[in-house]
Length: 143
Image 1 (cartoon, rainbow, N blue to C red):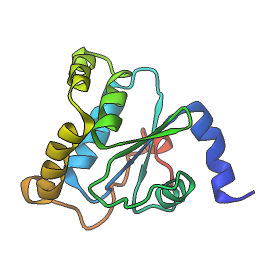
Image 2 (cartoon, rainbow, N blue to C red; image 1 turned 180 degrees about the horizontal axis):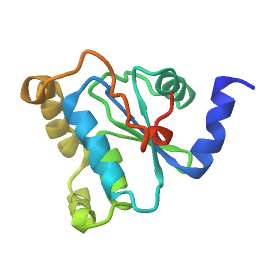
Image 3 (cartoon, helix red, strand yellow; image 1 turned 180 degrees about the vertical axis):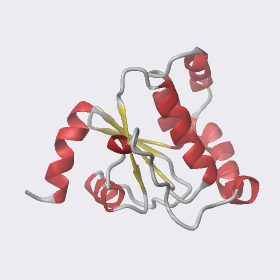
């Protein structure tokens, strides 16, 4: 069985977040999702990982850069603010209220997203290597 074949079961039963594994802000966002994912719907793959690269290729994501946040949910790939807003549907708390920003055109939302993404290393720093999950959450990360 190919490596991608082994991901199919995970994709069919979980939503996959693909993130920049060396970005401190992105790692914080992953931890934020994990803490609020009460139904255990999410799994994670860094863009730098074999799994992240295989999924990017499978979903034919062109022009993906480390500033692109991706969500694979129900066979569809969401990008940038669409990905973030789609995730809020599943989180406990009042995070669903953020979805009211969907009234704004995606190009408008993504303009601010891209401005932030270009400066996130300056604002939050970066790691030399991808996050190493603790044993308690290791099963949430694809390799």
